[in-house]
Image (cartoon, rainbow, N blue to C red; front, side, top):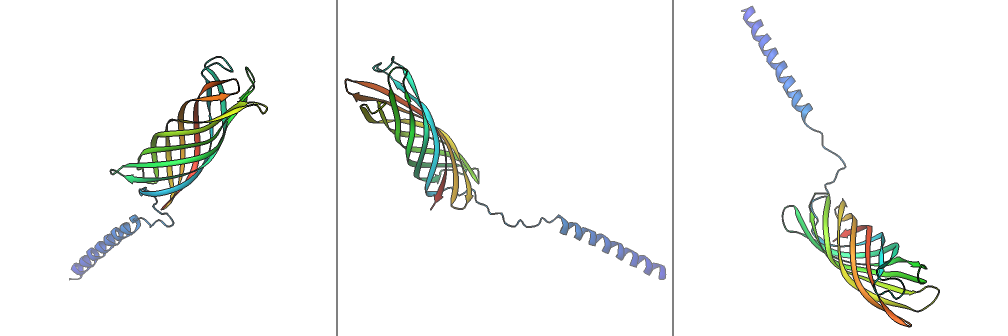
Length: 224
């Protein structure tokens, strides 16, 4: 009887030890909750407003040869600062479409004395664009295209006659938004814009100038 009792006690103790080890494994393998991390991605729908700043460069091309040989390119460069408003809506599980309009004060220009003492400057820029992006959760890479407008002045350097025209053309680009809070995102964008040709009138004649530009910008958007 004593041997039987000892055998039973030994078996019970072994089972108890094995159960304790398994329970400990279960407790150890359970991941600890993450503190201080908020899921901010995957909710891009809604109306938003924003502000942005950036840099632009491009060319103003003389087409008629009044001041220089036809096809002469004048380099332009400078800064822009603007505001934007738009809306996003999900059209499938991973695709987000949108519409955005923006307007920016600009100081993108230059001067050239090689043929005539010309100065030229983009005064403001605007666009109305569609967007199509991929919902990556906390980030939204997208393509954009639409209507582009630029108000530009060409004049004789040193206080001579000048003329201001508003070019209307098209723009394409790509960007990415990063969600930093439930209703705040950062937006990085590159665009190429062809604003087309306009006729500028000066004392003694007229000349056609074509305007193209590249812009890069960084901004912040606030969603409602």
